[in-house]
Length: 90
Image 1: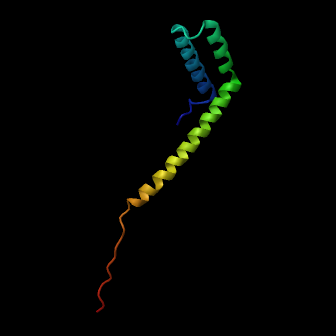
Image 2: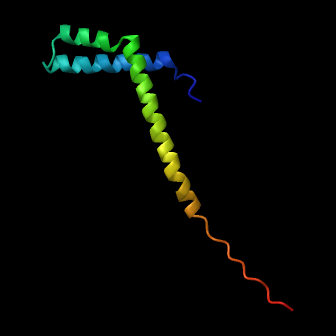
Image 3: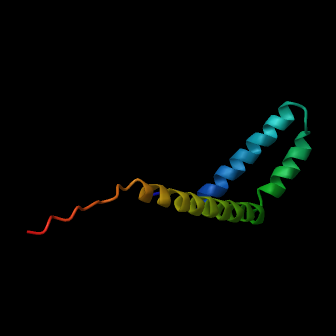
């Protein structure tokens, strides 16, 4: 389903987002270009992106399992009870 979503794609998106954020900091005067370049180069290393991806995957997995656990009882509670009245004996 998401065959295009692989490790290289995720790393590319994260690099672009970090570079974009650094550009905003430089444009607002909160960081110099040298500072942003050094920070982005450290944050965009394969090890950092791999660690971020691992942590994000763990968080997503935990949240997904919690949502599944909460959703299951709600479905069962919506089932109407079946009441059978026995036929009178003849």
